[in-house]
Image: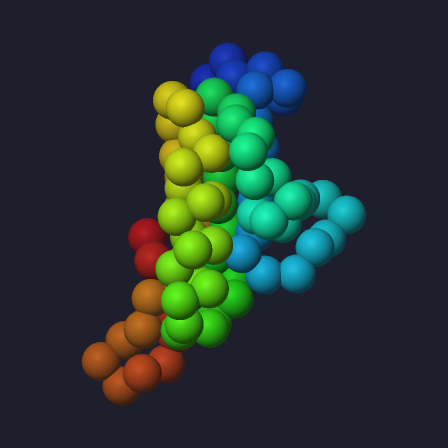
Length: 82
């Protein structure tokens, strides 16, 4: 996205899973926004909290949202979505 002209201060990289030095967790970004957000869905939970995390993460982007997540194949094994 930076190659497309998005300045670093306009970007946020968020995760639904655990905090890492390179990105922030969705709950820590609650109430904040950025023009562009990359949301890494890396928490495999299937509960109401997981849906809330997705909603909050997705609603932080004002102009562009990129979601990175695994999708399940027909036999249930994860495969990266293209």
